[in-house]
Amino acid sequence: MLFNSAVYLFAFLPVALVVYFGLCRLRWVKAAQAWLVVASLFFYSYWKLEHLPLLLASLLANFMIGSELANPRLARSRHARRGLLGLGIAGNVALLGYFKYINFLVDNLSALGGWSLDWPQVVLPLAISFFTFQQIAYLVDSHRGHTREYDFLRYALFVCFFPQLIAGPIVHHHEMMPQFAQRRNWVPRHRNLLAGLCLFAVGLFKKVVIADTFAPWADRGFDGGQALDFFEAWVTSLSYTFQLYFDFSGYCDMAMGAALMFNIRLPLNFNSPYKALDIQDFWRRWHITLGRFLRDYVYIPLGGNRHAEWQTCTNLFLTFLIGGLWHGAGWMFVAWGALHGAALVVHRTWKNAGLRLPSSLAWLLTFLFVNVAWVFFRATSLDDALRVLRGMVDLPGALGKTAASIPTEGFAWGGWSVDLWLQWLPAAMVAQLPCLAALLGSAVLLAAPNSGRLLTAAVGWKLNTACAALMVVAVSAMLASTSTVFLYFNF
Image (cartoon, rainbow, N blue to C red; front, side, top):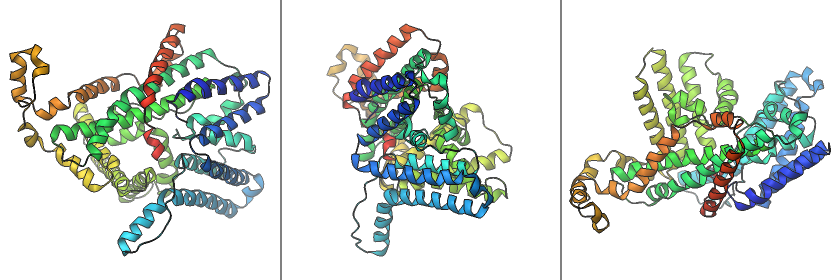
C-alpha cells in the first residue's frame, strides 16, 4: 500500500487511528498494540501477500534469539552469547543475501565461467533490507545489554510499525518502544495530530508534485539510450539528484508524520543534505539512520579509527563499499559506494593536513561530486553512466547548436527580441526550459527550512494551518493518481 494512494489517505490511516485510540481509551492497551500489528501486516501484505510468511518467520526467529541474548542466564557464558549473536547475524545476512544477491551472483558466475546456469529468478521481497537491518541492530543491542524485549507482540510492533516498515527510517528498539508504554501517548494529542498532518502533507507534496515531475526527465536521459549534449546531460543528472532527494525525504516526512499522529516520534532521516560543505557532512545529513547503522555495526567493528591511519582509511572505504552493495545487487551500486568511500578518504586526508576551502567553493564541489556519483547510482550499466557523463563535459558541442532553427510562431508576441535571443541561446537549453524552471524551483525549496525545523514549528500552529495542510493533502492526492512508487522500495 502506498502512502500516496487514496485507499491509504482516506481509509487505512483514519481507520487505524480511530481504532487504536478507541482501544486505548478503553484501557485495552494490548489489544490496541495487537491492532497496530495486524494493521501493519495488512499494510505490508497489501502489496504482495506471498512475502508475508517470510516476514513472520524472520520476526519469530529474531525475537527468540534476541530474548535469549537478553536472558541473564546466558550472560555468564561469553562464548555462548557471541556464538548466538553470530548465528543470528549470519542468518539475517544469509536471508538478505539469498533474496537480494543470488540473481546477481549467478549472472556474474555465468558470465565469468561461460556457463549457462539454469537458476530460477528470485523475486526481492518488499522491505527486506530495512527490516533485516533493523533486526540485526536489535540483536546487537540485546547482546550489549542496551535493550530487552520478552513480549513478542511488542517486538512485532517494533519491527512492523507501518509508517517505517517499508523504507525506514531504521529505528532502534529503545528509540520507539518506550513511547508506546507512556500513558500520555495512549490518548490523541491535538498538537501531534496537527504537526503530523502538516508533516505528512509536506512529504506528500514533495513526492507527487516535485519528485514525480522530475522522474520523466531523469528516465528519458538515463533509459533513452541516445547521445546527450551538455544541457540534456545536466538536466538528466540534476533531475535524478532532485527526484531521489524529494522522493525519499518525502517518504520519510510522511512516515514521521503518520507516526506522530500515533504520538510516536521517529528519528530524523534527512537534514538538508544538499547544503553539506563536505562529503562527511553530507553523510551526517543524508539517510541519517543508515549512516548510523553503517558506523555502529560495520565501521566500528572493522576497527574504526582505533588503528593506524591507513587502516582507518581502509575501514572507511570498505564500509561505504558495503553500503553501496546494500542498496542493490549491481556493479553500479558498488561503483557508487566506492566513489563515496574514496571521497571520504580524500576528505580525511585533506582535513588531517589542516587544509580548508571557502564555504561557497566547498559546497559547490560537494554538490557536484554527489551529483556525479548519483549518475552511477541511477545508471543500469557502465555504458549508460559514461553516456551521461560524456554529455556533462561536452560544453563546446552544446554551445555550437543554437535555437535559431526552432519555429518561432509561439514566440510571435515577443517580436524581434525573441528572434535575436534564439540566435545565440543553445537549442538544448530551449528544449529543457520547463525542467530548468523546475530545477530552479527545487533549489529555492532546498534553501527552505527542513522537516526537523518544520516539525518544531508546527506544534504552535492553529486550526487554519490544519485546514491548509488538509488542502495540500487533498490536492496532492488527486495528483497521486498518476504517481509512481517510491524509489527506495527497490532497495
